[in-house]
Image 1 (spheres, helix red, strand yellow):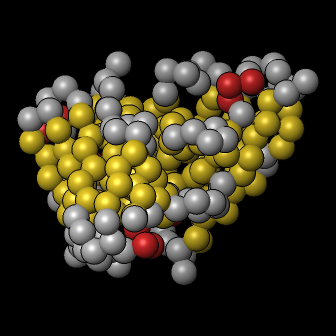
Image 2 (image 1 turned 135 degrees about the vertical axis):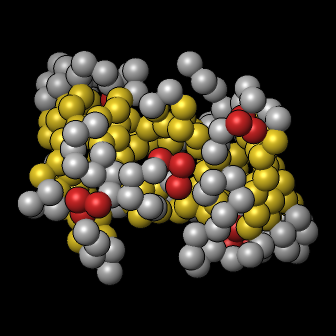
Length: 122
Length: 106
């Protein structure tokens, strides 16, 4: 069964850091680009970042550029999101998701985890 | 930056056809995906590349895209279709989501 399991969320103070992880199983992880998408409580979906299957190409939303870093360890089938200089507006449920067909974003995100909650508050 | 505009809400009678629009500048030249999100659940991809359904998505779900509007059509609406729906495109090396539409089945 194809599965994604996020972890690492929690309560952090403004200006703090956090690292999210997403453990993948049931598919050849290195063959697929991956994305992080977040959803603030009661709000819509906001794309955060994406990474190619090899990890050689990364993409970021303007709202997180320079503060967040996406990475992956294909030997561990794990996706990461390193978050620095966190702000109250980063408070959200963070989902990792897999692209349907390898590295083409046009095919959309077909598998999503259940999310990990990040709360930025003093 | 590129923006996608969706109506906040759409209502449809049980068994009828619902149409949810997604507006964007020349969106017809881009490739649209649609997601369904039921309360408390992760999103589910229902349409990709404008008109294609992933495995397991009922034929009642269909998509179109032309000019400045993409449309998700849900035929023979069921109670289980009540959810939030989001459109999405890839543009300038970023993903963009619409604000979402709440579908109510009456």
